[in-house]
Image (tube, rainbow, N blue to C red):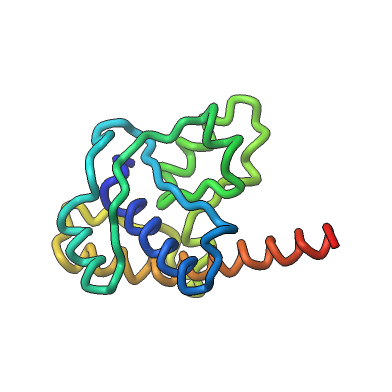
Length: 157
């Protein structure tokens, strides 16, 4: 929502995986919230601390999702929960981008997880749970993107 906890953590995890897989020139990652409440702010210090213990650097600044630009620019629009999924879908006035919108948990190996809970009021365990879910889900997302890149390259060849 506010782009200070879950989304910047997912962005940091994704950037780390992309770097390890040497995909930095092929995949662009950015995070945004559905509200502008924290616009221009860094991630929550608690999320930064928990993520850094796992080796992730969270250095983005919060911004609000821009439907006019982001729907056109990005191939995947990823949300953390049902509420944000519905909000993003509602911003697609012409109904031409729904195929790009996913919940991050749809890429998780554990199909029993349907949302990434907001850790803001849940203490340390909440932040750790979010990181666990995101590590699992973001790995699946990056694998999916790699498959799409390979498929695209075959079609071009």
